Amino acid sequence: MLELFTTLTLSAIFAFLLNKWKKSQNSKSTKKPPPGPRKLPIIGNLHQISNPPFRCFRDLSNQHGPLMHLQLGESTAVVVSSPELAKQMLKDLDPGFADKPRSTAGEIMFYNYSDIAICPYGGYWSQMRKLCINELLSPKMVRFSRSIRDDQLARLVESLRECSGRAVDLTEKILFNSNFFTCRVACGGVVEDNETLLRLILESTQVVVSFEVADLFPSWRIVSAMSWTRRRLKTMRCKLDKIMDDIIDRHRRNRLSGLGNSEFGSEDLVDVFLRVQEEGKLRAQDLDMNENNGSSSQSSSTDPERWYLEGCWLIQVPTYARNSRENHQTPEVLRPLAK
Image (cartoon, rainbow, N blue to C red; front, side):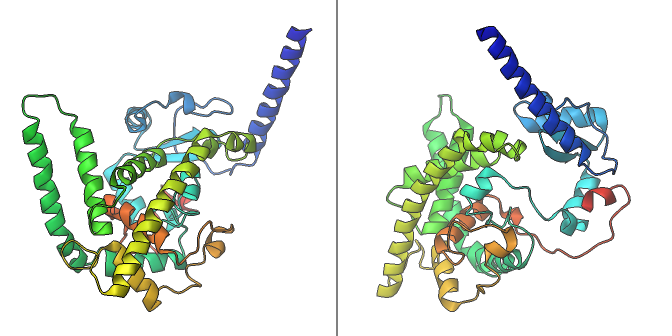
């Protein structure tokens, strides 16, 4: 009796998954995608992906060409491995590929997709780009951070010298140095719970760049509800919020009392965010994430706490501040993908 029940249950699950896959196939566009490896029902090419993913993409692109189509569950991906095509997509065709896919990490860790790297293209993105160019990545801020960067690099070299004759995890050293530099530029020095902050930033970065099953099968709500990553991210977000609230409160008190927050007398990133908020340079209608996302924001759009995390991310990966998003003519080979 138990074997019969198990067989019927597995058959029902298989029939349900097969039906979902057929519906997704029928709803797809009739446009022909770029070439790619053969796909399996439901999972697509997931069985061909292993860590690190970029090496798998490289090996597959050697077989299927510089423009390759992959089906990752319900998500469609196009892998570009040619420098010429990458330039067209990231520069010439930037508006066509501006929007980023939704993800669990973007929703939770970046306050409902409010980070400039993943937010929808629109008024909010334009305002954040203006803030990055005029304030966060300005020549003044670069000059201010140079002394901190030189000092942090000297500390890294000294720590390596002290480890002479012993095995050293260079990756860990460099990551710690990079995150420590981020905290000094953003917060004006070492925060009270600095080790926890560094660990949370590093862990959140690792989660952001990893695959999440709920993101690959967005229509399977049960997968999202049972996701351990979602619970882990929410716990990390709560811890980060508490630390960042303390940092922002300290900066506000120092600003009211006329005390400086930066190590070298200039403004740090938190000071910049607070000043921009006080001056009202960011318009509320352009910061409304409800308009851009069609969903409720988890945080006020003018909350410096969210901007602080944005600044930390920009220091780590500054190339997210793009130069322009002008319309260009789409080459024939990429035209179906940009629509």
